Image (cartoon, rainbow, N blue to C red; front, side, top):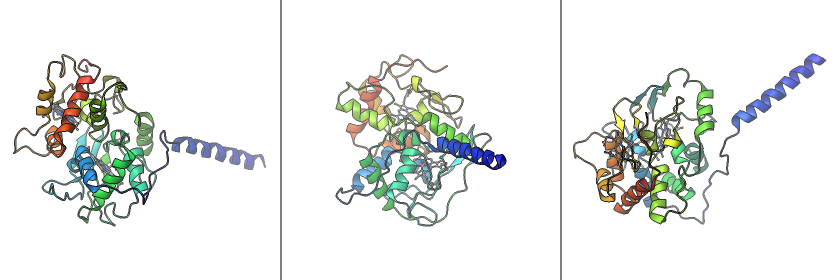
Length: 301
Ligand code: HEC
Ligand code: HEC
């Protein structure tokens, strides 16, 4: 008898633990299509380029800027293992053609897959979590209008311990912070727009912010510069510190966001510049204004 109640007790404790583990920091209502709200594919396209989705999800040689084919990307080599961005084309078997807006929203802003797994942070959902409802809905409508591509890339192959599902869950719990990173509440609308673009869809902090040993962003050193995880060099300090963009004018920053050479490969900051070229010049100015308004941070040791 005591045996049975002990087992029941244990089970209850386990259930509680499991519940605690599943408790998301930002479990909110997920989106559904409100027929009264008109989605805008044109805006979805801008959000797509601001978010750099093609740079990870389109394979080499498949990038058509008119109708990107998102059949899955190349290997991303990192100290945490090899990551591959999957097929997010509207193919119903291999892509996300069968997804609802709610499923997409959960992936983008909560980092949770349809089968309940926490995504690896190689997918920068810790930035996308700051995107607005409208941008998520428009982006989804745009993605569903792109060509369906069959086939998928191999699964990511994280190294131990990043391959443990609890590692991704813990990362998510520690680093998923939907609110703004820096407090610029008194800033004007231009800085606010830049803040949204940089901290949200633009995911600039993914490369430009130094990381903790667990691979999370060191938010106190936001945009203070960091070595690229794939070993391709330094993503410089973007704050108005003398180690960073301290003496740069707004125009110089905007200039540095434009593509440099026509022949550049679609990788790293070169890819970010190609993507940013799809945004109106006003967005680039807003990004520059935000960078100038940041608290200065000394280059990370
Ligand atoms: C830096 C690379 C990178 C960028 C940029 C990126 N993704 Fe991903 N994405 C990934 C990786 C890697 C995964 C797989 C994560 C995993 O399996 O845990 C992923 C997964 C996804 C998934 C889940 C797919 C599935 O089958 O479960 C969706 C949806 C998605 N990304 C959409 C987007 C959209 C939309 C954008 C642009 C706003 C974007 N991604 C930008 C790397 C990226
Ligand atoms: C995939 C990683 C990556 C992402 C994402 C990224 N950057 Fe960069 N960025 C770099 C690297 C690496 C460099 C240095 C090489 C270069 O300038 O091409 C750089 C350079 C820059 C520079 C020039 C700074 C200087 O001192 O020369 C600016 C400005 C900049 N990035 C802004 C941004 C903004 C704004 C975003 C987001 C919209 C962003 N970057 C997203 C990796 C990245």
